Length: 156
Image (cartoon, rainbow, N blue to C red):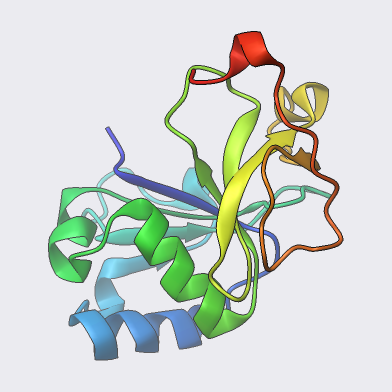
């Protein structure tokens, strides 16, 4: 199971990402795969991290994935790493909120602030994450409307 699946709103420059992962965390650029998952050869060595570009017109379609090796190297959880990368590259990110609702995520702003958001459930079935509104205020996203979840859905 993947420990990291961070969705970025815009492209992370692959060379700059590899430099950061190498310089800050000692991850060799040779162990970072950049490209579509389906283009990777099955018998290639297992990468520490993979950066996958989006399909056509996908919002938050750039996805950084990894598991134990990435966690061990960075010493950061998924949300922490998303904050580090969002601040460094000036790009918003989405990470799973850990809840039972597939349309609820945590949005990480470019300033590192974060909060839960609701995504478009219909677009998500096609693999496209589109933020509808925030479920709580996010300091770095003052333009994002906040619509709290109904009382019956709180705490899930």
